[in-house]
Image (tube, rainbow, N blue to C red; front, side, top):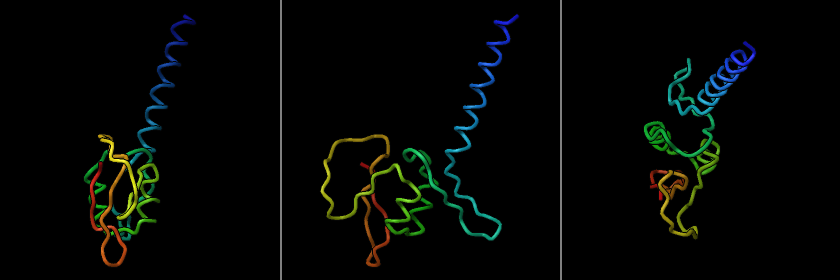
Length: 108
């Protein structure tokens, strides 16, 4: 009986922690009630390319990019970097417009 209760508590703890992780890592590009897009910080690397593309389409500044994706390395034109192959969207080589805003780029 005690063993069954401990297993049940363990399973419940896993479910609660998994739910907490899921809600904290959102990359939702939906709009708030005023119609403005909501872009909060995203932990980890980029996994939702649709939300990322919507963010880049707004032509963010490098500072806004770093605020939104603090775990992604942002490399601006002229920055020295190694060229190792990464498949986890952890490093973004940005293209800048004349105004200094990010207009595109690629993951490497």
